[in-house]
Length: 231
Image 1 (cartoon, rainbow, N blue to C red):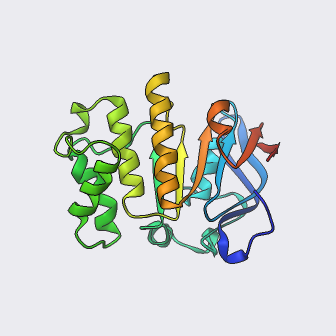
Image 2 (cartoon, one colour; image 1 turned 90 degrees about the vertical axis):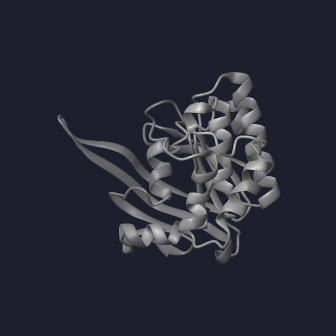
Image 3 (cartoon, rainbow, N blue to C red; image 1 turned 135 degrees about the vertical axis):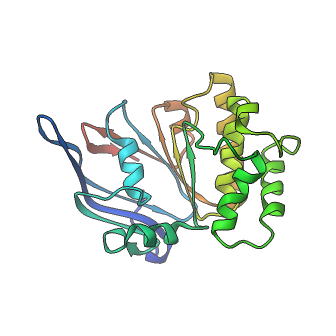
């Protein structure tokens, strides 16, 4: 992640970030001294083995969890200075998420799941926006299906539609193909990059897939809680 950007273009910036948790044997250090930044339109992959701390880092960068040390700025605002509600308001309409486990609400149809972030962001005509987002991911004929009636690949398409529907500036994706077979996962990745290309959103991707990481502008690797280079 380059450092020669206009400060106004920096969407997320971490400076000396650490994360510790209390464990039965004492304090466990998950992350230490992490510094990085992502600018508008960039695509970056965070690589690392299972348990290396990459998903924890993603949660910190998105303001879903709090750092133990250091600072994270999202859209130029220090997350340390914001309450949970204020962090949620900062993300609304500007940040999208795609998770390994889809995170769809089972009692809502595909259309209702995609409408949710649009409603939260105060978007006019959320149903129309959600319908168009589902059409773009090839699910125009699945609007009224519930998650349990959809395949894993279709559920992840719904999740991608939900993430992009509000027109976010920044998308966080945590192992988006981790629950899918290789062929389906490959299609999902193609779709994720196609949607990103259409919208110009920046994308920060957590993965252990080297081929997927190779498609990104920047690759960062975490080992034992530390950033160990990459480009």
